Image (tube, rainbow, N blue to C red; front, top):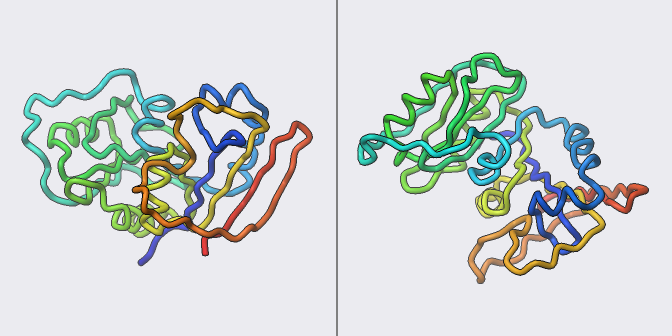
Length: 226
């Protein structure tokens, strides 16, 4: 299949946790963004939870006719750009501002369970969208559309743990890039870099590409997937 070169790029503590409220309190945050720029990935993809914290407007979309779903696959491209901000929002719940003039246009990826009202809402805000997959998003189809229709050749998956694990489990990642901060979270139940797969899932073996230490104790690790 045709798809972008995909790098999962995350900052985590020594014990693998990625809570943003924690990572900002340890060294490595500035290096994380420097590394992201060095990876040359004009397009970034976030999951719903991360997007709600960092990108979307406050609140949740409430459809007047919640049972009137789209029921079919499709996409709508509002603008062309060198890079995009992609958000996975399976059922269409996040609120957004008008996206007519942003430097990195927004693309929202949803399943066919999304309501017709939500697509109309995105259209009214000039936001591009992709609908594929029934109860769950078809990630293979989604990234193929990103490549063939939006011209995305390189992109970073930037969390959280559930969406990272979904792309890993789908076999779509080419590389894992970790900014390891010199700190320990240790709190029970906090999300890891890859999280939520079944207990019988086999480990994924990686090939080390490079190691870059920093004076503040942070380390940038790059791995290729076998």
